[in-house]
Image (cartoon, rainbow, N blue to C red; front, side, top):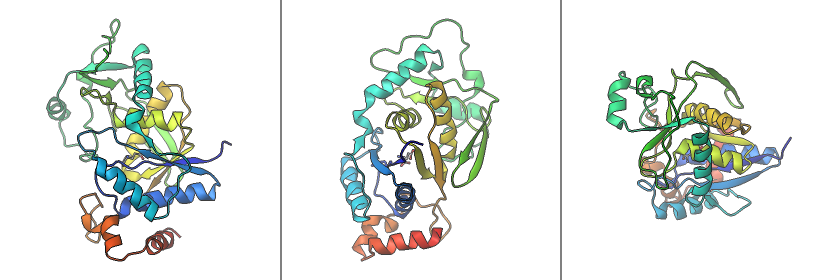
Length: 277
Ligand code: GLU
């Protein structure tokens, strides 16, 4: 068995809140009990939403809570050549295609509102998928069109989640052809995350249960790229007192605000430990 290597992967798009802290606490506990290590990955690819100030805030908040990571932080924006290399492999294997449909085209053709919520892509209509006939157009040095992965429709996928047990999805029903690269020349979260987890030697991914569907997409990518998949531990999501999911807009529960109000890290962590006991 390889030594346990986990990761904390916050996105610097807002202040971290209690829900993030709990996910990271699970990740740290998993690493600690396995005698392994944690790395810190800064998911800063989304230039539209990302703000530099939040990177500093994120590091300060993680340190305040007592999380430790053994190596210098890895920023996804510094790893573009790795994502590009993976994209080129998918292109050479004819597993992707350029997609010129707009988001509106996709939403209209996909019909019924999508269950996955705003964070999830609508299912890409198979009628929009080009036939496989001949070589793909080149990627070009600067990418100006969306590229999607052609998923194996109808295939049943399963994985064992360390927390929730067996998880199942049917390709084409639960998710469709998804973006691997965006027309603003930015790798998609799915591609960057799969490349990083594989290349940085992550043995177990700990993240929120809202990403279970993404895990299936990433399993398709691991397979397409010939990499073994890590183990997965999805954390139950945290709701506020009105039963609504915590999101970054809940500033009242940002770690910043809690700290200013005199809440202590020990108090926060003790609560997580008690809840999960
Ligand atoms: N950066 C992502 C987020 O904050 C997490 C990605 C992951 O854990 O795979 O939602």
